[in-house]
Image (cartoon, rainbow, N blue to C red; front, side, top):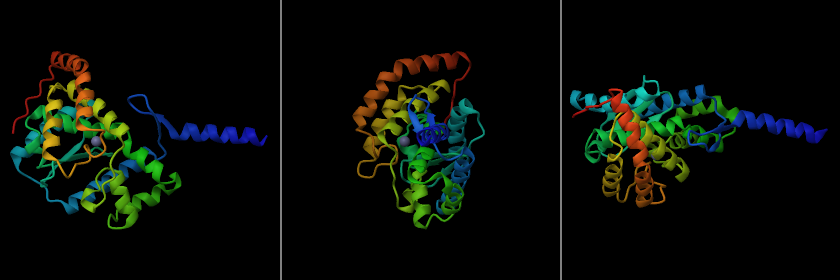
Length: 260
Ligand SMILES: [Zn+2]
């Protein structure tokens, strides 16, 4: 009897917590989407308080053009903000928020390279990577407390949460995504940018530029990857399939022409 009850409870726990990622990996997902979205919105508010926003029309039009082409593939309606920050970095948060640093625009040389990074960041969100990280770290019943905690990013828990959301750098906490999550974001991001009509071959050049630019202080998307060369060879292997996606997109009239 007791064993049956335990099996039943395990079954319920399994149904509640186990999800499959876009690449078919099983994931522990305990936080409700709505709570992750609230945490994403709060994290975005925190960053806006700390980091000056670049309001130049030309830069914003360019970044919006690339980001909108990508997010159109996943329902649209994302807010995009350009931050004055020399770190070559970008991020995306649950609740449909994207941040791009001005420093990234020096490393990403064209629209296709910028689309590589934005695709990668949006892929982290679609794959629920921050939910997975928060679920591993905190018990689910803490959900509402966590929303309050992230509103005070100076506190220990608030700082940890900013890190788990992938945006802790400003708060002195870098909690890198796992290698598995990084590869997943690379694969899904590449498909996403190709489906939007961008040139997937440029992803390789972007990661080469990135590894040159970030020697010493890696941004989130370089921090745990096995190595730049592994990442690049994994991407190269997927370029033929991505080129098919791109030509299908272009036949549908998706020909992004974003210029700075
Ligand atoms: Zn990443």
